[in-house]
Structures are given as structure tokens and as C-alpha cells.
Image (tube, rainbow, N blue to C red; front, side):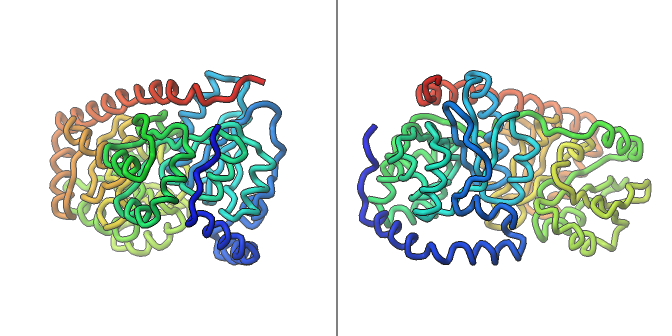
Length: 424
């Protein structure tokens, strides 16, 4: 295995991060006071492991937040089925991702917070875990971490890679650094053609396609809660506003209140800590909050579902889903396959940069539609909810589209299998 290529800008980055290392602990403590870090696990962010390393070969999978971390689960499950002797370490950077991983990781897999990208933290992390294979998800390009793992002898793959034009422009200003980083990867599997072009232009060797967010099982739910809520709803239609951001709840509620009969609107925000804020903003309607223990009654017009890991429950109640992160600017939308896997069609706003290919395919298949604004959203909701045949066709198309996405997993396994460590 060849050593990482040299780059003066990466050497300078290493020196700068080394010089700033003494500030890391106080900055992490300050973030913990603001709820941005887990105060009980700050040591992990500095590279101090909180769990022993399992015996035998270890595969390390790294993502940053909830969506990316969850997208790794089907790949982890498939690799574990193929090689039961492997141990798995999953690292991520946010508290929400850690909470989700604690519930959803396969038996025996370990979660740790990713170390901050200083030489000392990275050295402690790699010295303890000694991974034979590292899988980096989407756009997680941390120089000290990647170069350190490569120097230690780990094989590396960048999977479900995504690079925006803005990020590509930033890396083009440091071409030797980009080339050195990308050449550390034995395999680069990209989400889309635009990313393939950008990474190739920066010196990466793109070897195939993989969008992990196209994969996965339907979101789980509590069957008892589902039965209770189904009974409470009766014959009412339900619109689920999934993964919403600030400003979107009012827009979606405005569209829904024009419908007659008015369906129940369930708002499942991307950040559940906004629940009280959302309920207050929508108080002109009859609002109840899940996290406050308020019941869903026949009079409830808006139900704020501000609890963690219950989106699978709300989508099972939905006639149609309005997927958030798409009616503002700069977020890029959220994954419409989450409702599609449960046979629920999606309506999105115009900002879908993160899932442009998927939305284009789903719209073409009749599994999703796009609304430019509140008035258009109201019209599209009325069109599907007032026409049972149209609604049924949309739901069937969504389920069929989701079922077709599994083929990518087999192709990814074929690409990654040669990188797996030899059995102990």
C-alpha cells in the first residue's frame, strides 16, 4: 500500500490544527453547555475511547449526522451477513445521531463520537481502534483523520460520495491537497454524475455509483401506538409534514387549512427541540404536542410530533407526506424514500439539491410532485386527497419505486468486498 501523497497545504493544516489543540477541550465544554455536545462523552471527541476494541478484524464506518449515519445501516447489515467475523465501529458527530445509533446499530456494533481533526485526537483514536477498513460517507473529508488512517495501513473507501459545486470550488483552490486526500481512497462510489465529474477533476478515481439513501428498510414503529392512533383518527385523512425546518410549518399549515374537509396535519420537525416553538406559531389552529403528552382528539387540527425516532409511526398514518427542507433555501430537501418505503407519496418544495436525482425519478414515476409555493401546495394536496384513484396510484407508484432501489446494494458489496480484511 503506497503512502499518502505529500501536500504543502496539508502539512500546513496539520501544523495549524496541532497549534490549536490546546483550545479543543474548552471549546468542546462550551459547546456541551449549549447542548451541542454530549458532556458525558467529550473524551471521545478528543480521541479517548470509551469502549474496548473487539478482537479480530474491524471495519470502521464514519458519517456526520443522523441521515448519513442511518444510511450506513443497510450496508453494515449486509457486510455483517457476508462476514460474521467482522467487528463494526460507527462514528458520527452529532448528539442526535448518537441517540439514533444507540437504538438501531446491529448487535455487537459500537458507536463512538468522531474525534475532532487534530493530530493528537486522531492519533489516540486510531491507536486504540486500529481499523483495517474505513468507510467514509458522503462528504466527510477530514485531512488528519484520512491521512492518519492511511498511514496506519487501513484501506479506505468514500461511499455515497456527494460534493456540491461550492465545495468543489473550495478544494480547487488547494489542488494538491484535494489530490492527496482523494488518492487515499481505494474506492470512490458517488451518488450522482455531477459529483463524479467534480471528484474526477480534483484527482479522485471514481469507480462506481452508490447512493446509500436509496437503500434501507421501512422506518420502524411501535405497533401499539399505531393501533391507538389509528383508532383515534377514524376516517380522517392525514397529511404528514416530515422533517420540517423553521418557516415551513406555517406554510404547510396554511395550505392544509384551505382544504375541505380539512385533514389532520401531523408536523414531524427535523429538530424536535423546536416543538414548543412550532406549537406556539400554529396556535391559531387546534394544536396538540406529542412531547407534552397532549392527546390527539377528534378536534385536533395540528399534531406536533416532537419526539425522536417516531417518523415511521407518523408515516404509517399518512395519506400523503409533504417532505420538508425544501421550501426554503440552502437545505436541499430530505429523503422522499422514507415515505415511499411505506407506500406514501411525497410532495416537495423546489429546493431538492440533496436528492435531485431521486426526486426527478419519483416525479417521473408518479410517486412524487413538486410545489413551488403555498398556493401550489394547497392545489396539489387537494388534487390527491379529493381523488381516491389518484391517491391510490401515487401510493402504489411510491412503493414500487422504493422496492426497485435495492439493486445498488449488491453492486456496492461487489466493489467493497476486495477491501475487507482477511479473516483472523
